Amino acid sequence: MFSFIPLPYKILIILFLLAGAVSVGYVKGSEKSKQVIAEYQAKANAKIAGLEKKNNEIDFFILDKFFIPKLFKNSHILKK
Image 1 (cartoon, rainbow, N blue to C red):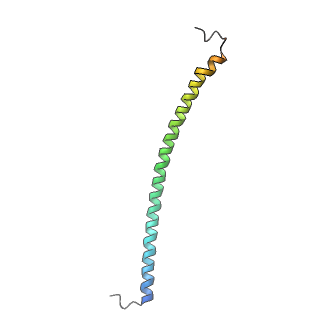
Image 2: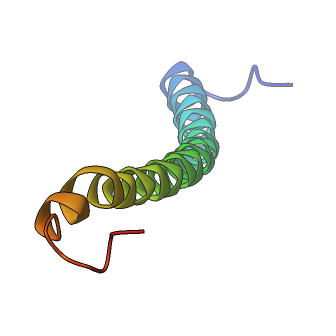
Image 3: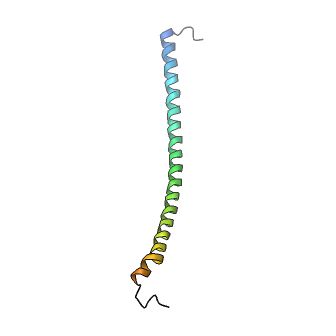
């Protein structure tokens, strides 16, 4: 069937087929990598939100426990 096609054209056809297969694989791989990066970014954003919440709780605890009593040490507001 392919015996009537000259050898240089056969080589060229094979090279084009290989190049097409590589390009299709590259496109599918880049789509998959974008999906993986988006999943990682969503996890990182959730972790950042949790850490910011804990940081705010710690800041409030430090203000409530250490700073405010020293600020109003002689005040009648904190005396029971």
